[in-house]
Image 1 (spheres, helix red, strand yellow):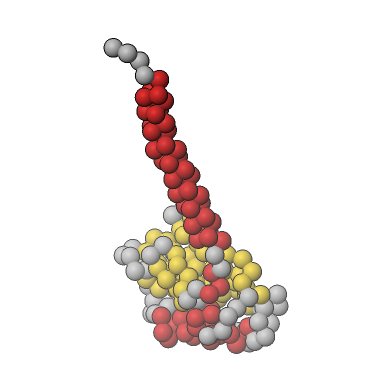
Image 2: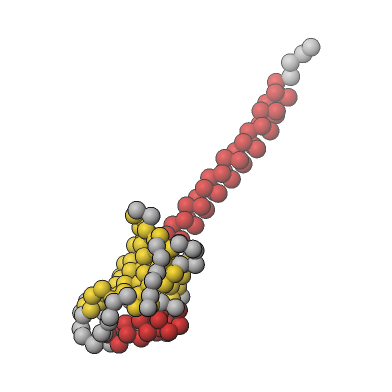
Length: 166
């Protein structure tokens, strides 16, 4: 049996081409996933119609009022089984009236109950709270509204519990 060096070289080259293509393809897929995840995490949530917390959706301020709002910060966390989403906005010209319209829509159109009395006539308001049963049995969703001269915060909480109302 004789050895042919040209035959051995061509076989090695053929094996390297698919390996290089697999490596390049894998790198492209990983980079694509990184870009997709970064886009999802960093997306501008001020245009969203609903705030999502678990399987529940709460209408956004923008959706209820029909105007774009200046988003400052969004954070999401889970602590002791309670999902929490905080959405902070810059002050608006008539934020007391805006928050009153938002609260009224939560109650009239989205089935929330007032858990604390509210009066949105001042320049600041703390701890206005609304609640309803979650889409999942045994859970509740709470929406808190806080505002002052610098802006307002919508906090949505979702956790285990039941809602009793009169």
